Length: 128
Image (cartoon, rainbow, N blue to C red):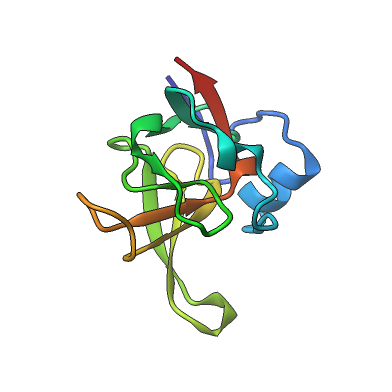
């Protein structure tokens, strides 16, 4: 259980790249995450606080260069409107520590039709 998180995190030590993505709303290079090729059963957790975010059963190959999922775990993520870069997108962040995870797009597979396009560096995969 994740407790006592603030909008700037939970005191979990982060690498410089994790800090840039999770706390400064950065984006990792497409194709750079080893999680793109992860096929084992398990759960993807927030690298900033450890909260469970996505089940491996919802992961799919989107061809985007980032780990993609068609649904989060209940209560794992929240979204906000992101008007940066001269366009409107929906930002996805951890519901517990508010770390930036990526964005969600309406071009995913069934059953949701959503593509949660996540920065792999923001995730911690734990095999089943």
